[in-house]
Every structure is written in C-alpha cells, then in structure tokens.
Image (cartoon, rainbow, N blue to C red; front, side, top):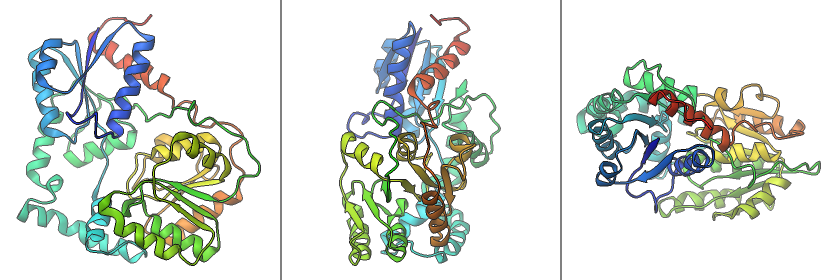
Length: 371
C-alpha cells in the first residue's frame, strides 16, 4: 500500500499541530505495517508517487490542499482528510481587540463578544474580512469537503462543528484523537507537588493576564512558561506589569526543552490552560498524563467530552475563560483534590493513533494489510 501524506509547502520551517500529527502517525504506521508512506509537499511529487491513498493534513490551507485532492482524484487514489479544525470566533475576537490594545480581563468582554459575533458576518459580507466568515469562503470549503472518501477529526466535537459551520452532514468519519509521547512526559508520583503552572505561548488567546490577576489576588504560586512572538510583546508587558507586586508569580517567556518542562510538570500540582481555543491543548494532555490535575475551558472552547470524559471534577476541572470567578473556582477545586495515582490518559498514545488511522486506510482500499 502506498500512501501520500500531503502537507503545506512550509511544513519544515513552520511547525504546527498538523506537522506533529503527520510525522508521528507516519512513524507508528511504518513501524507496524507493510506500507510505503511518503511526505509530499508539491503536486509534481504526488503525481510521480501515484499513491493508493492521499491523506491530506489540514483543511485551513485550502488552496494547496485542493490541488492535492484534484491531482489524487486524477490518479485514482482514495482521499482522506485530517480536518484539524475548530470554531475560531472567540479567538478572533480576543485577537482583534488585543490589536487595539484591549486585553480581556473581565466578564464584560463576553457581552462584547456577543455583539461582535452578530456584526462579524455583516462586516464580512461588506468588506470580505474576516475571510473565513464570508459566504464565498464557506462555499469553497463546502465544495472542498465533498471530495473526500473519509474524514479524520481529532474529536467528535470537531466533526460536529464542521457539519454545523458548513451546513453538511458527513457521517463517514473516524475520530483520531491527538496523542502524547509519554516517554517524554511519563507519569511521576509526587505527594509534595505545589503551585499552579501554565505552559503555553504567552498571548491574549491563552489568557495569562487573567491567571496572573487571580493568583496575585489569591496569593497563589503561579509559573508561566512559554515563548512569545514579536506581535505579542505588548501583551507580555501587560502580564509582567500585573505580576510586578507578587513574588509568587514567575514568568519565563521562552520555550523550554522537554527535560526542563518535565521537571516543572513533576513539581507543580495543577496545570491551567484557560484558553479561548484549544483542541484540547497538548500541554494539558502532557500535564495530566504526568500526574497533575488540570484546568481547561468548557466545551465551547475545547473538546472536553472526547478527551476528558469520566475525569471531569476528579482530575479535570472546566472553566469559562471570560470569567475570573469561573477560572478561580476551577483552580481552587483542582488544587484541593488529590492528583492522579496513575496515568489516566494512556489510550491517547501514538501507537493507538497509528492503528486507528491504518484501519481507515485498510477499509478504503478493501484489503487486509495487517501483519
């Protein structure tokens, strides 16, 4: 079986969730099954390879992905899509206000969001921006989606959002969850864990400003770890300014290697990702698997059912990212309860991801390639 993994041209320099998923899935499938997988980032190579299946990673790189689909169809290949999609209106709202110098720090922003969302479609119809809200863009995506033989969303919620957003009703899909390399972030038992940590890029969508305000007021220990892009330096300065009077808040505005981050995960008790958009956030999975309790956002912002079913209010605590009161309540509950006595996320590993993905390939080509 020959499988083409079709990805955007800049995948080697601009790493994202699509690249992580592609590289790890490829490694696991090649290790377990008799297949040839080739990463393709241009049409010419796709044509020369002539695969049985073309697996497209990412529906948001629409033009590139559409070219791959059309070429694969001409070659007679089955086409599969890893959708990697989420509802982005909250994140757009937060980002757009941040560009004006307004950073979310109260529940009033949720009221403003509702007005924003109602006007966003009207503005898009008049000015063509944001592009993803325009009728023309949605029509193009709808046309793109109908070409696929199978869909591989990362959660049930993701497929529901796609069907709702684009007015479709696809049922030919298999959920392939995001996975964690537990060799890099193994479970660690430590009864002396203390304090809160948030490992994420420091930016308005990740909501660190509200975490700082909560921990400063509550006199809690907080460690923020994550890189910052040049366009978010103003947000970083705001976060530092709010933390300046507290010696219990530590900010490390750079990406740490896995050993340093693993040490922090093994000594802190609760990880928080009060983000306006996650699916569900790799750091939340790594933290929970490492032995921490975690705070994540509710199902409007994060696929909680797929990833944390059965763990809510035990080791996973949900919040509304607009509300300090809600975030505070979730943090307090997470801190007061015992951390996991074992890795509660073992099923979310790359071996399972490879197996589940290969079963889809097998179904599509109609042959048994399993060893």
